[in-house]
Image 1 (cartoon, rainbow, N blue to C red):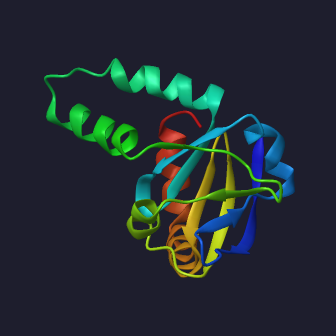
Image 2 (cartoon, helix red, strand yellow):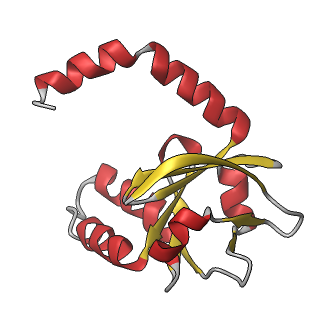
Length: 143
């Protein structure tokens, strides 16, 4: 289970330290890809395989299905932890997420999200201010 929020810096080579608490889940390898809300998603191999199977099963004839599968699959690449517990984030993914120097690495149960620190702060502030509204809508779904 991946939980928590950690502040890190991205180095000049594009490497980000994975929090020690998360390393066991990605020690055998991981997949990094474009996420939603302009962050990056990092999945352990088992979680990625489960998601990828769902994506390839989406109806090919529907434009939204093709677009979402492309977003997630075409942008994906495998990463390995180096000896210092870092992963290399490719240029095209850093550009997508508008990652600068400071990042937030967030555990979201089955995945890690990587955010530019300023964008994370703005997103979190917006979400927190709408939390009552969000909770009410989720309550309608039985959550």
